[in-house]
Image (cartoon, rainbow, N blue to C red):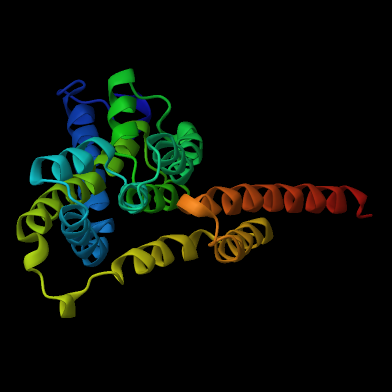
Amino acid sequence: MSRTDLAPLPPGPGGDAPRAEAAATGVRAAFIEGFWACAPFILIIVPFSLLFGVVAREAGLDILQAMAMSVLVIAGASQFTALALLQDQAPVFIVLLTSLAVNLRMAMYSAALVPHLGHASRGVRAAVAYLMVDQAFAVAIRRYEQDPPLGPSARVAFYFGGMSLIAPLWYAFTLIGAVIGRAMPAALSLDFAVPVCFIALLAPLLRTGPHILAALVSALGAIAFAWVPWSLGIIIAALLAMIAGRRCELWLARRERAAP
């Protein structure tokens, strides 16, 4: 337990016991805070995972394959992308490349979390990497930048608190969707969950000009290159968005240096 998690306590006959008890209370409180911070995403996770289970069965996967994909990948956007490409009979290399491109945002998420969670043990960092999802990252990074600050152990607890809600729901409703499969009526289409989820996640993170420009370029690029086979337009749009965002950052930096 890191000593930065411990609030200053006057010495007493209990020695370190009051300090340890305060630390444990702080970690439990952070875990519960993370759990409730991610609770609103139930409205997105449930239909999103249910939809994946249904679509996976319609794409020809059996229940075991659908569950294996959700448990091993645990990344809805890339899972839907892979299914769409498999249905289009795309080569395996293209499926892997496009899914990797969709998931490149996870590398940026990881880099953003290093200052907050980089102190954790290798095993804990591996668990965080496996459980890296959009919702948990968005909630965690906002909390880490707010006051009052969380101590190192409390930051880890906060992240796992959120994922203790998200991950079980993702697995459970993927299974339900895979079991009911084609039995779901077309009138109960859940396609709305995908765009709503990403809008809810993206909007609060658009804080600067480069962020907004990158989002705009990626959206326009995805539309402009929708005709490219095997969804490769997503990769083109992502590259253009990264270039535009970086160029905007450099321009703003030069402008700031040149200002009197």
